[in-house]
Amino acid sequence: MNTRSLSARCPNCADESFYVREITETVRWSSDSGAELIPVVIPVMRCNCCDCQWKDYRAEEAQAEALRQYLNRKNWVLLWLDDVRPAPVGWTHVKTVEAAKALLSQGNVYQASLDHDLGDDEHIGTGYTLVCWMEETGHWPINGTVVHSANPVGRRRMQIAIDRWYTRQQQSGQRL
Image 1: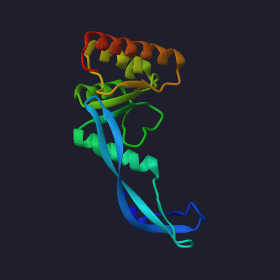
Image 2: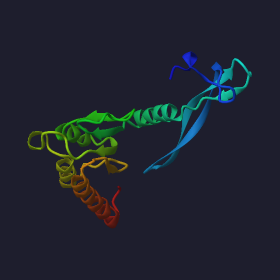
Image 3: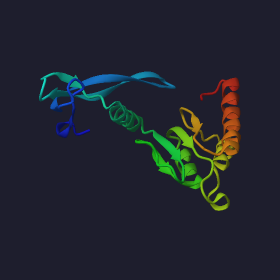
């Protein structure tokens, strides 16, 4: 984040504010290896009118950047499978089952968010096709899989398979 060029409105008087300095705060991030504190750089702003100083959290940007840095340090990726919806900031966007399989096969997917309908089911496959492959091969994200599909039937089928996998892993005492 290039904080030196930031400007924002003062929360007290709504006048233009400008960048003064940076402070570092920590965000608690939990993973399967335990909790870790991640430093997040927060710009401090000063108001032109009332001369107050305030923290410009812009929390989504700061936390997304901290998460990206954390995942990069661990060499992990966030997988977003969807043919239409754009991926959230920091997620690796793939549009086909084959591309998702390639990422999952590397073993460094931290979390996955999957859509069911990917356009051409016959040639591209579906999110359910991917989840079945994950079940067969054991290629699962380190920190879970969620379904963001608008298709209620497809979402339910995928969720049943995902829950079945994680239930088996918990019962066998294996790492999730």
